[in-house]
Amino acid sequence: MEEVIADHPMEYDDNKFLVLESRDLAELDAAERYALSGVLASIMKRRKAAGVSQINKYFVVNQDEPYAGQILHDILIAEEKKAWAIQQGLWPKPRRRKTDSS
Image (cartoon, rainbow, N blue to C red; front, side):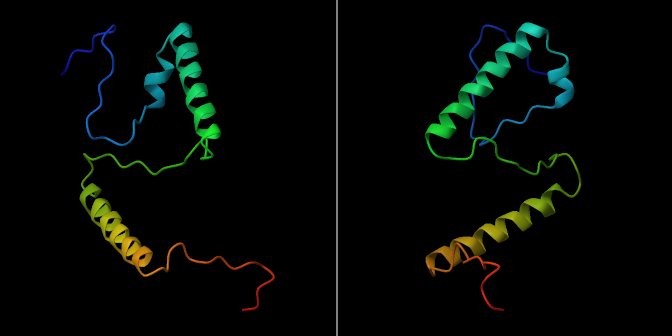
């Protein structure tokens, strides 16, 4: 297992997201939880100023699970379909309002 050095700045590879397990957060001391809370508040403030959602929701799949490959395959196929729909001017799909007739 890789050793974590406390004073070493975090480096990221090509991962788009950072997922933290609740159990790991519960093990932080009060000062660490306070610091993390401040970082998250700063991120949310910047996202709000940029006009994007402050909190996004995601499905997380453990890559060690046997079904992970199928889920990735399904996501990639859906992304290809979405890219095609965008090129055709069909995305985003117009939403029906309750007042629209069926």
